[in-house]
Image (cartoon, rainbow, N blue to C red; front, top):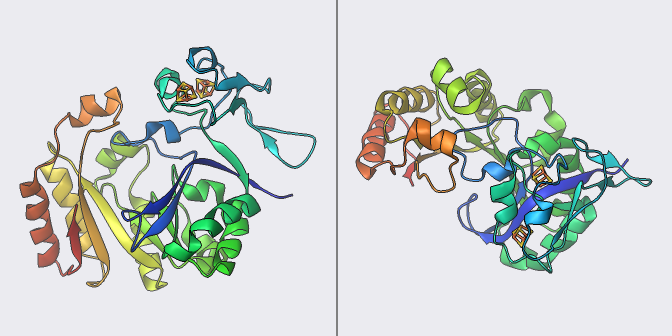
Length: 295
Ligand code: SF4
Ligand code: SF4
């Protein structure tokens, strides 16, 4: 059966989602719940509770009458969204997202691989490649396996943006299709990592090592927090000490925009100062990393 991608957003031209000018496709749904997530409405899929429907000032939402908590299969092969969203009426006020108690969004597109390919075809002459992000794109692995070959037929390369918790070593088919993975290393300390993300650091670090050996590690990213210098340092030390010198290592300063209250309570509302990323870049360099990009 054909898969349908559940897509939160497509940015036709992005210069921050991988090298060059790329189309970035953000999938809905993630297996982590990072406290510093800028787009927490991408974490869960809509469960059809209907709470946002009556709040929309433009009547752009309608309950589909499907069973709450499920994305049901229709008579054909296509899943039916629990809430129907009419983009032609939507004014992007985000009242629905602010209303949703489930870290979800009704503003998602259900697309076949062919429909997504056709959308990207229009911008293909002007981009260097496509990045699949999220949410966590590997949560929709079977859709990726359908759509990536179609994207490659357009002559475009494909990168995956991952939170690091996918078992890439167990999926040579997916890995062979893409040019590389942009990998998050969120924390090295197991307790801090679980608190921050809901999962431990073991699999992301295993992936760092495996993807590097497989020649599929495009870049590594770590977010630096303003009030946790010891944790920042532990993470950067652990990542930089096993990174090949040429691999790009992005050190991203925490910015609280879009972060939910729970995250602000834990991490604070300050932006990480540039002095902190300079300090950690120096530490990473001392451990052999040469391609450091502070952002
Ligand atoms: S963002 Fe769009 S769908 Fe959501 S409440 Fe506003 S107008 Fe309605
Ligand atoms: S987007 Fe959220 S509030 Fe709206 S129906 Fe889905 S789960 Fe309920």
